[in-house]
Length: 212
Ligand code: PCA
Image 1 (cartoon, rainbow, N blue to C red):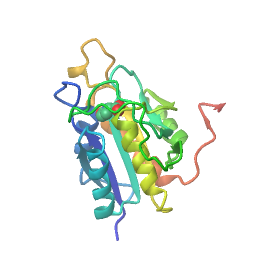
Image 2: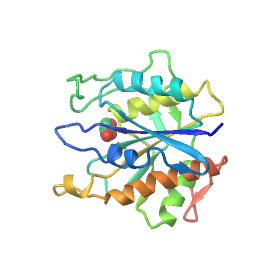
Image 3: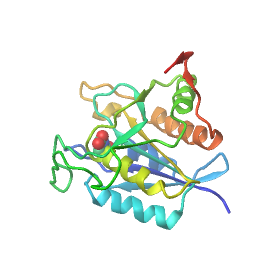
Image 4: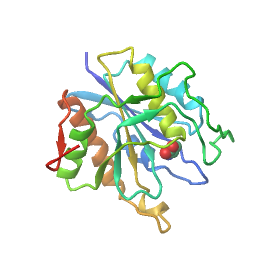
């Protein structure tokens, strides 16, 4: 049976009309990368409902790899997220008007989970392709971190499936003075991240010659 890669992006939020993560993810729907089939799904930018939608897809597709993507407005680089923390603390309301403050995502869960994709290998693959990419140690405390934490919690029972999260800069048309990255570069980043995750089981120790 062909392996499935679940690739998610988010709906627009905070008054925007597009979200680079979904614009890029949807272009990869149905593509084959490294012998696996990519299924792209859009998640609501809503605490709780986003995770319900993700968990439904995990049950339906049983993917070998799950890569979630989100928008990080204001960031100039593609951020490969390493850590998801057990905290909802919303600076703005989500798309359902909810704004949880200082709340755990899972009352009985650990403080954090680490991505199970090879984060340094992904950063290196992106940088080798000339893309601006960094390793990030915080996905924030809004809906992206919420989904990332819920994903890694769900996959903690599935040793054969791996999960990761990538934050993308704005697209040029939404930038309004913020840094941006063209859509084709965002798509390329997701494609390379999937290929690196499928191709490498052990992470690299160093990026660009420097040890962390
Ligand atoms: N970015 C937000 C939520 C949805 C998205 O695309 C975040 O960084 O939490």
